[in-house]
Image (cartoon, rainbow, N blue to C red; front, side, top):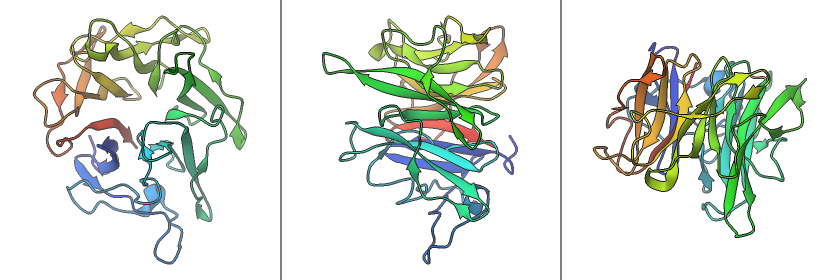
Length: 288
């Protein structure tokens, strides 16, 4: 991993963080003391040290509940993230926000135009920046929520009409937390029987214009405990996720597993106490 070219982002407890390789750094507010806009990639800021620091306080990290990683486009000119409003809780509405860089600098945070009925979660951009995958929650008659994975394609300078992804990904249960590879294989959180909370990480290949029957990842990734918030490398060479399996540093830690071929994955490896602490570390991602 080249530390001059790779950026890792994740969410710790209620705090989103961002880092360079293992060396963690803060992206501060886009607007400085005098309201000056930063124009560079990742707001043109460098890494100050090895200690994780709050990501973009009062701009992306707010008094509300940010519940995703900051999803930067491959060219670094757009960023999307998910915030739960109403008293920093999981109560709705939850919405996807975004910022865009132009010759004048970064825009202010705004609601993404493709939120469905004002709601959206866990945005994920395709590598070419032409498609965004995200989750939408729908309230059932019993008052509980179920989620499906949606997508929306870029239409010129804007976005087209959002819709549920085609094929066999969505079910009568909940599917969320999408992550996409270069060849459009979708990794996501779905219902997995026989494990804690009945959730696990799945993958679905994209063929003939639709997603195929999902398959659960092996036990090296899906333990008998909670495994969620997957991020898959664009070339599918490794996966990052949060697991609450025993032996970690807190309630939920970040782990890595490498693709060894033929549907096999290496044993999960904890990323260590530079990334993991006493709370939940979730929603990891790597940016160019």
